Image: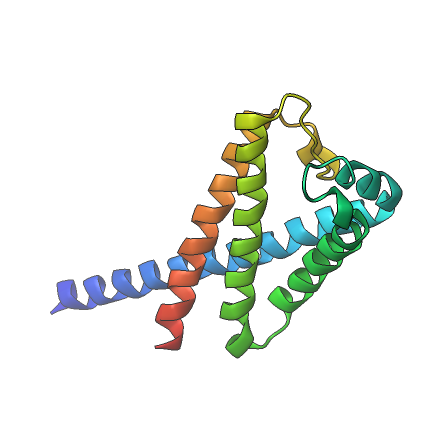
Length: 154
């Protein structure tokens, strides 16, 4: 009987730990997007100028230059608000946005000699391969958090 109680308690601890890890990932996404969005807005002229050099997308440099940091900050705010019904959707949007950034990095690595990266702060100091790996880790972490949130809502 005691072994059954201990097993049940251990299982609850595991579930709780997994939920806490998922919440940590969500808040980490919020921090990351707030940090990078804020940094891009602080350096908006440079960000727009850099975006204007991107093949095919350069004509939308101002829209991208303002849109991405505002979107990052909006996602960050929505991730920390206590609205569980929208949190899953916002987390999905965050992971998709990270996927877009990762696709951009992969395409730059594969096809472009003069690489353009306009990420903020410490992230901008990473090598391209490290940055790609960094983004892939965020995608995996985000998918893990999505799975945990789905289990909570069922």
